Length: 155
Image (cartoon, rainbow, N blue to C red; front, side):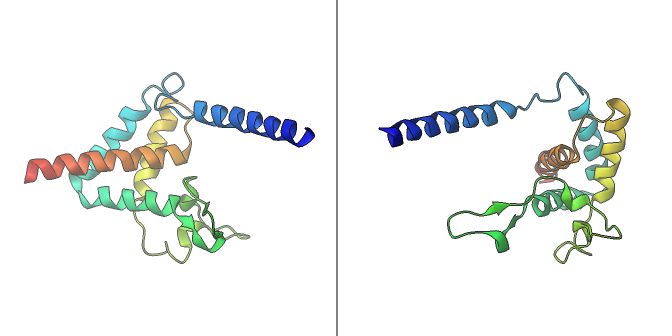
């Protein structure tokens, strides 16, 4: 009987955790705290892609490398996600090698200056509100949209 009630308690607890985690994700997360976020990110990306459409692909690749799963830490049953945290933007410090210069990223990725430009404009509009990880994700999303629209117009 004790194991049944412990199991029931565990299921109830996990259900509450799942509901709490689900409730935190929202496309309108910054609607009240930084209402201009999406238009700022989109305008910078539109300018960049208008000048060089290949930069859209570069930003998508930057996002991919940020979200890449670390297979070395994977178990047989599941992978341990290590990304989507903007860690790909980290520079080296005296005590740590940043991901920007890690083996798979060094001299391979570009588009860092685009993320910096978006972050600067977002910080001017709403200081210390938007995470760099969200800016990378928005830039990648807008890259897909803008490059796809450009391709449609060109072909």
